[in-house]
Amino acid sequence: MDNKTYFAVYTLMEPRGSKSYRHIYFTCFLALYALILVMNIWLSVVIVLDRALHEPMYIFLCNLCINYIYGATGFYPKFLHDLILDSYVIPSFMCGLQAFVIYSSAMCECTTLTVMAFDRHVAICQPLDYHSKLTKNTCAILLVFCWTVPFICMFIGVVLSNRLAVCKYHIDKLYCDNWSIVKLSCESVVINNLMALIVSLFYICLTVLIIVSYIKLIVACKSSLENRRKFWQTCVPHLFSLINCSFTVFFDAMCNRYGSSDVPENVYVVFALLMLIFPPLFNPLVYVLKLKEVRKRSLKTCVNII
Image 1 (cartoon, one colour):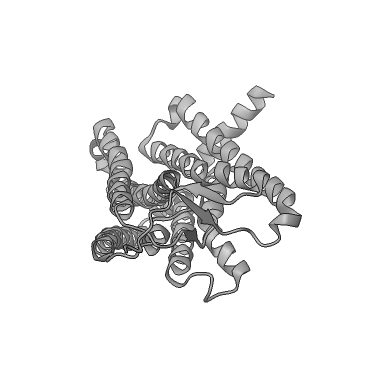
Image 2 (cartoon, one colour):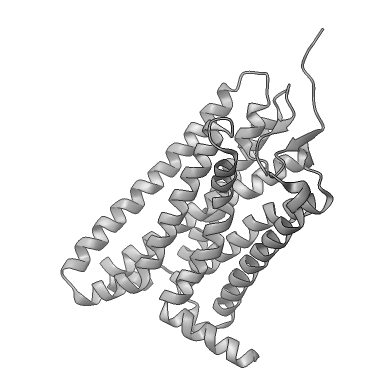
């Protein structure tokens, strides 16, 4: 008799103390979601409406904000729904969709930050060629790259995981991710591992490109006071975003690798949620505080509305 079973519904991790504190959890996560939406929508609207900000750096920043909205929408509405109903289940097709949205957003953040590093490299190291290299067509191609690569990677990943027969139905996380779906399988996952390795190598290559770009930026800043000024004004928020992204992705990878059985549950939950809280909440704020033009026009728009 075949012991393999195909489950139409998966159960998710139930937050500790959810029976007693789910309304507090709901209020906190609703506030977080609202802050993320307000912060990123506000910054996106300011950049879109103000023609003075229609420069490559600000366009890529707008793309980053739109991506944060997209990624947050993959987690917060479902989790808030679960808290209200006190029911932590998800249909298998919705699980695949949630994994696709959350992790394509995380990949899109990495590709966008790579493109932003390229933009800063050209602006500081090759200022005379900036407008000839970063044309409207080039920016459009780079934006397509930011979204197409993550979508293709995650589409293939989700399709490969959904083809597997599963023999377990519990996902030890507050949300679905592709590796958790793969771990439910009772079949060989060699192809899935190979795909994950290819994607990891690609993003490692992007990381190397960013490091090389910053080495060249630092060298260029040594010989010019103007370059140092540009670096501190425009590269510091980008560096903050890179560090934020790197740490949150690292913690998420550790959660996927070791699971809640190897670390305290509270630590595991916090590490798993960092990727969905810190980058979309703090990265736009740092850009608003650090970039003079964005800050000035944001305040101007706010005053006009009031």
